[in-house]
View (tube, one colour):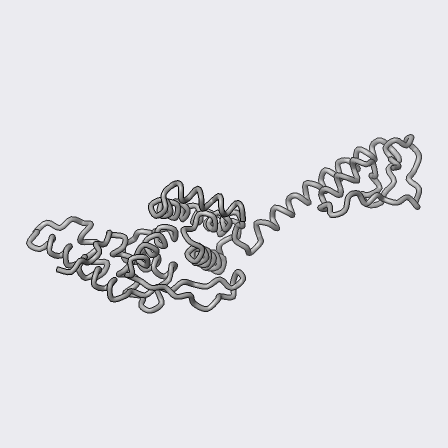
Length: 163
Length: 118
């Protein structure tokens, strides 16, 4: 694989060079990092960097690009109108029975939607959802322990893991 | 005297809330009703733990509602009090009344319950 970092300063990347695509399915940040690691600085704006300061500038640009991409991804995750998936999973795991587990999730969803409609920020609504989900786990677990005992709970979780 | 299951305070609260919301009491509305009347906010987990116990003892029955538009059409679970539940609630409240009768000093706790569900 050609590497323009190994080229002497002053030489340019030929216009016909092919930017390596790298392993398929890479996220954009990973792709930028991959291209940088493989030395294809031409990936940034398809520019040929002919001097050391230009290379330094390119390196900084890549850093900014990666940081920007990470910020965008994080804010996209915070703005997603979906409740946190981990909290949902935990409620499903700790719910005493499936029917009641679905009902708890439905009620948590309703609270979440009401929070958003009332003008609350998405991040705060998600925090409230997580908090409500965590508070709901304890009583559900206690009820399950009272009903089936610790051994019963363990058997239930082993069954869940096996399926 | 026929044997009527005894109720805990949280079971009394939930049954009274269901009675007030009849026939469309479900998790959110039950929690809001209890909060509006007593000022205490219970988690859904604790409310459903009580509801499950009541349903197992035949004091409430549940039915699934229509799927909602949000989140892939999850259904609400509506609860209704049964005859057994009403009888148990009446007996439980009568027992509290009987214990309270003649007392001049009422604890703030009993007053609060009395005012909340008067």
